[in-house]
Length: 169
Image (cartoon, rainbow, N blue to C red):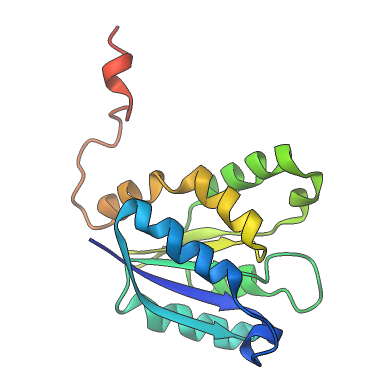
């Protein structure tokens, strides 16, 4: 069972001035991989607060998905806060999300989202819009359980193709 945490980064959301629709999309999508969202919070765009929450959430979760703060505005600090915490970056997640999102809108090239491991917890930054969150999770969702299992030391054959039944050569 995947124990997930959702951290929404939004100044307006943290003040109750904006409904967190992106966080709701994340919770809904996580049901597809039988993840149980045990922790959820909205925090302002403050690097120290974000980093502290990531470390705190990692104590009781093996997956943390953030939403918001990945662009280039002066208040967007989620990638920096995430890098302050992660011990191993996993650029494949971000690369895959940006590549797929670029097919929908060239604006996605401005995303600075990162992903990585903190101890045995997978942390992934997602964009702030509900539509972009849905698109990005659609790209990476199936890879999440595998990465978490590998991090726990429960997978010994990472080279096995997920679709090996169709690749019998």
